Length: 278
Length: 264
Image (cartoon, rainbow over all chains, first blue to last red; front, top):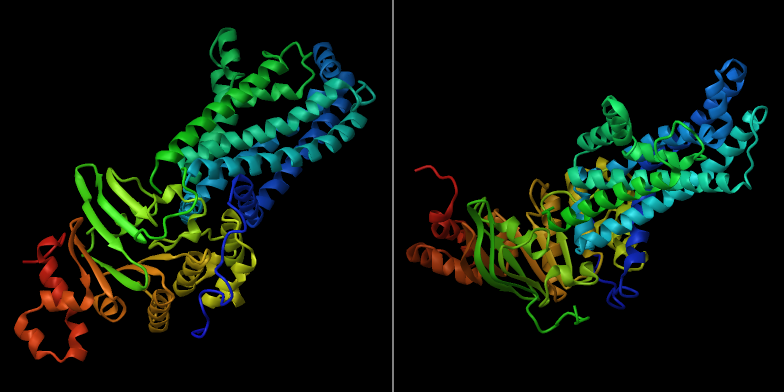
């Protein structure tokens, strides 16, 4: 093949244009993220699940409104924003979680982690750059989903309840939608970093999101409910009005729960990636 | 991290008392050596001698229990744009199967603040430009090695580490890598290449580091090594031009006590 080529450009040695820093790592992670097909499949799934479940829930509840029992009707009116956005956020988080786990475990399964570590030997900065890039993308995309979801849901439910996009509670819930999705993505990324295997990582995330809440709520009394709702999935209460009488925690407490899980798992991931051989 | 530039008068690579154990097994045992620019240094040893582990210690992929591994006088992890100091082709693949060669290299270039045009340059050097937009998972072993070498050359590094680069390659691939290593050394770079193929090393390496059971057994030029470790009568009877062929015999004699598994 090309035996005549020279390894170095004849003119000048190749040098970094500047001392590489965190933004360069973020650009690199962004290239890595967008150049995999699985990223776009997962994100398309997320958008479909999110919008689909929001619209379905709104349509079903609005249609059945006259036949709902009075307490459900009260919930409907007290927490219309939660009715519109929560079904979407809970199911779409599944796609984000799978992507978050795979973002890291696929680096281990393919060997890419070695290239990543050679390029950024201070490993924590590479993980932080990945987290910032991925979390940022999910936040922005989720907001782009939340706004039309709300507008459509608001129109569907308008016969029985009034919601407005300029309402502070609505704005807070729409912002919380992106925050919840991004935090779920980061929790999944941390779990992927800790376990390093795709199947194990996805199993753990699914158990945390869909199995454990049901199991823990079986504990008798309100203790079970309090523990079950302190899981990351319970933090979806931040995407509600906070006026739903059946909610265990307030939106502010939900935010605390979400931040606590993100910080604790993220810290564990940063601590292990620093020590581990790759 | 007070120094910003690496020390250019330091040896390209230096190991000082480098030691690494897995459980009770000491894989790298107090290694001391230097690798210098302008020549190909062959890194030899029987299977399990600690070659790959030593390379991974030099690159900061593993942490040494004691001792130091220095690149241009500094630990790898303290280099701010490491790929501009060292390029490495590891034995195991180091790219994502689902990403194209070009995107893989662009991501690496961005992390080092290297211009993206450098990606096209190295793709030309390794001859992958025509398939650069295909998913790397579909590449043959030879193409995968070329992608690994493209990544190693990306930062125009002063030091190149190659771990078993010709394993499983066809004759054309072997020939290409052999000439590439000589060319890199000729450009004034330090090339450290591990192999267990003696005939390959005999025609490529100017200098040898030989290890067995994690310890340094020899550190000398290839010619000296052959002279010292072959049967003097055989050495004298062999014409000078054929002496590289004696490397295998010399290696066997030296490492006889250091092989992991042997039939007696």
